[in-house]
Every structure is written in C-alpha cells, then in structure tokens.
Image 1: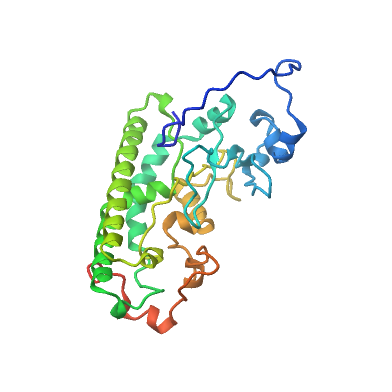
Image 2: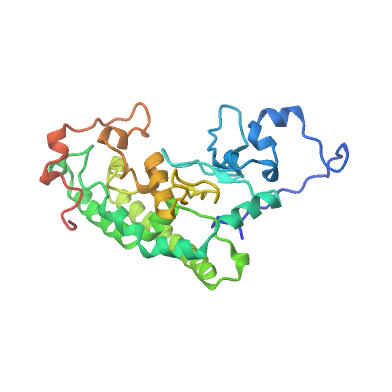
Length: 304
C-alpha cells in the first residue's frame, strides 16, 4: 500500500553483482554512511521516543535522513525523473525496509483522519487563497489573461480537494481491512488524476492562446506540484506540554506554517515571502503595496 499515486518505474535488467557477505546481511560501506545522518544509520526499532520527534534537515550530500522517526529520501530518480516545482517540499518516505513501512502503518488512524476530513480543510484553503495580483496590474493585462485568470480560479475551486491532497499526501494503510481507508485511497487517486489532467490542459490551452506564463507564478494562480508533498504524521509519544496528543488539525496547521507551499503560500505573512521561491533573476518585481491591495487588482471578479 504505497502512499504514492505513481507506478514504480521498471528497473533496467543488469547482471547480478557479487556481494561480499558479512554476518547475517550486507555490510554498510563507509561511503554509504557518509550519505546518511546519524539517525538514519540506526534502525527504527532502536530509536528513542524523543528521537522520533526530530525533523532532520538533510545537509549537502545527505541522501537518507529521518523525519519524525520515519526514514526519508529524495523522490527516487528514474529515466523520466521530474524536478519538483519551485518552492514545494521534495522528500518522500523510504519504503525499502519493512520496519519503516510498519512505522507508517501504525500512524494511520482512519477515525482521526475522517474527523479532519469532515472539517473540509480544502474549503479553508480556497477561502484563504491569495485574492490579489502581486506581480501584474490587472488593467494592463490582455483580455486573454483576464479571462484565463477567471477560468483558472474556477478550476481551482472545482479541484480544491485535490489541491489540498497534493500538499498533504499521507500514507494510507490499506492492510487494516477498513472500508473508509480503501474508499479514501481510491477517491484520492481518482480526484488527483482528474485534477492533474484537467488543470494541465486548461493551462496549456491558455498559454497556447497567448497567456503570459508569468501569470502562472502569481500566488493567486495555484500550482500542482510535479511530485506530491508527503505529510509525515507525528508519533503517538509526541504530546503537548499538558500531556495531550496533537490533533491532526494542529499537526496540519503547524506543517502549513513551516512549508507554506503546501497551501499555495496562504500562510505566508508577507507578499515578499509568497514569491521568495521564484528564481533569483526573475523578470518581474513585486508591485507597490497600494497596487497590490487595490480592488481593481483582484485575481478574478467572479469569486468573493
């Protein structure tokens, strides 16, 4: 029950390599160890509770680390590897070892997750979206751009739950024989596949019709990340000062504050922060504050 919606790439066949045997299994080479953090070198079973709270940030050259105890990696490279979209988290759980997969399974709680889903966080995300253009003056845009922005926001509204999923890709355990988990897994795949296909077609068609691509960099024009953003849930031992566990909503809000791309930069405290991920020599500058907050400069006039 891999949590990713992508099929695993087929490996090119190659002649089997002879391995030096050591004891019961493979010996870790020094070169490999240099690419792992100290926690990644330990087995999940040997981690203390407090070590399962740590969110490691991989330094240069590190390819394996732990995030709340779960072994992480950069999304596996393939012949058709895609680069993650600017600004979006780019890490995934490493599912190579059974004990690490089991650790993810244990964190899946369908009852708690249904409670979170019942609050419809995607509605909050759409309501909190950036509603003003911050790089372009609407009055100076071509008709195709203004019409495109209306169509883009309408599509964002239709596919808002899929956009939320792309930023909050949890591992759903399908071995619980739980009908809700199975249905949710099916729904997620269907919704996200549909959103990806329809939104990409809309953007491609609009760009072909003359839409300037810089419009797509506006925070008010949402981006489907090239690869989904994994959400690693907390270990049950991680509790608040008063001894109560963090709810999924509290975990989600903390995550969205730390990595605002997950909610399309809604949680940024300034417009400067909303475009910090753009390339260094980006051609457009942030508009003046008065222009950015002008009612005339709304992304679309079709929604409140």
